[in-house]
Structure formats: structure tokens, C-alpha cells
Length: 356
Image (cartoon, rainbow, N blue to C red; front, side, top):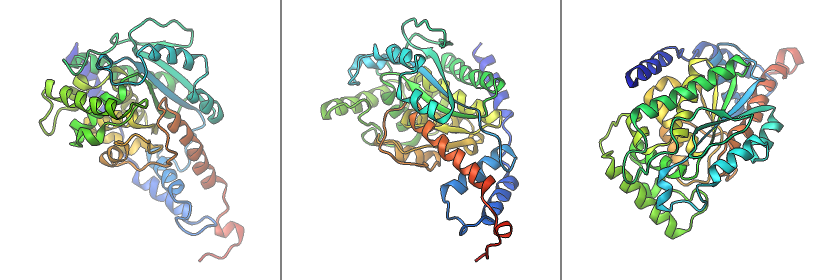
């Protein structure tokens, strides 16, 4: 079954089309013809060109948007690395489903659908809006053993791909990554340390708001998890690393990113946890990179260096560290603005304005 899942993943990767450089150049050329100094709209011009290169169309229709929230629990919570108890994971999932979380408010404002997926929550959740695709009932404690089997990690990636395909069939063409899982900043820090070489002292942040003693403990737990799982070798297999020190929801987001790229759709990356998933996805295949848009730079201390390691530049910096997909959904507004500016602004010629 593991071989079958891996072969399926390879087939999806094979379907990712190269970035259309010509379409991107045409978008930039059009941007330079508009009534403004060249490059004066900054990142908005860059993202408009990127969207053209992704879609092969000058101005793609991205009006249907979805933020996919993957939820899962982490066995490493038994090490006391979070300011919040593990029971908060299912409680927040219900909050998402009832429309009461920050990401729900921002998604409504952006006209985006919230899709909440139980991919690894320990307990049972019943709700008419829940997408239940449970791969594990929480991961094992990565400080003592592998968080998941390689087969579970692959299955979780395939769930992410499947969810994207389902949303595409419903009309979505622009995606954002979101997550919920108490303990997942610890898993993300471990992934970042192994795959970038960043020391745990730089990859581990405050997460839900732990104090100095809690942070030092978290650093030690990440070091122990890396040691226990033998993840010191350079050039490590990203799927193996994901299985040993990742989480089901992070693996699901890896699948969301790969699935969006395979379907020719842009995917907006949220904060630290989503960026850890983006790092894994990019290490599995660099073909995903042109399809990623970094939304914001989180307050989590390792995020800037993580984004730099992937090769992504965030659109905004608001000192956020909530997760859920909140920063990514905020970025939807800037993407809409970029497309509208390119479509509705007058050119120098049409407006009769002298070009510099």
C-alpha cells in the first residue's frame, strides 16, 4: 500500500506544468503600460505576473477561493511544550465549523469558503460541515519515537491532494493553507531544523505563548526528537522527515500545496506551520515553488529564515502568530487588488497621458 501511495504521489507531481514565463512577461509588459511609474505598485505587480505565469492567462478568474484547514493532534504535547491543553484542538475545530474563529470572520470578508478537515484529531468530532478524513488518532510522541509511519505520512499527503480536487470540482481556483493542532509549532520547528540546518534555538519559537523556561524545554524536546529519530544526515528524505517529526495536518497541507500546483492553481501559504509544509512540499518537488504565494511573516522567530530557505517573500507583516490560515486569507484581498488594478487601470495610450 505504501508503494501504491508513493506511486500515486509521483503521478500527481508529474502533472504539474512548468511556470509560463511568457505569460508572466506579458503581464509585466501590460503593467508597464498602465498610468503609473514602472514597478510603482511593487509586490502587487509581481503577484499579478506570478498569477499569469501560473494560469497561462493574463488575468485568471480567481473569484472562487477556499481556505483548507487541516486539524490533527500531536503526541509530543505530553512533553509539556504548549501553553494550551490538547483538548483545545477539537474544541477549535468545532469553533471553525460553527463559524466563530478569526479565520471564519476573515474568510467571510474575503468571500472565501472555509473547509475544515479532521485528518488526525485524537477524539471523535461530529458536525455536518466537518470533512472527516482521519489518518491517525494523533501522532506518537516524536521525542520518543517516529510521529507517524511513512505510509501514514503518504496517506495524509494524498488526503490533501484529494481535498483540493474536490474543491476544484466545486469551482475553487485559489487556495489558502490553514491548520489547527496544539503542539504543531514544535513539529514545524523540528522539520525546519532538519531540512534547513537552522539550529533549534533559532527555529523554536513561543508558539501559543510559552515563557522562557517553556521555550528552553521546547528547544530540548526538538533536539531530542531529532536525535531519537536519527535525523542528522544532510539531504534527508523529506517524506521520511515528515513522518518522523511532522504531523498529520502538516502532511495534509503538503498535499494541498502539491495538489493545487498539479491543478494549475495558486496556493497562499499562511504562517510558520503552513510554511513548514511548504518547505516539505518544495523538497519533495521544486515544481511546486512557482505556485506558492507567501502571505505574511509571522511573529514566530524562525519564520523569516524558513521563508528565506524556501525562497518565498511575504506580502505583508502584521506581527501575527495565530495560524488557522488567517494571514493567508488576508492576502486574498491583495491578490484581488492586484488583478483588478491590472484589468481596470487605464493605459497611458487610452488615457492620453504622456509616458515618462
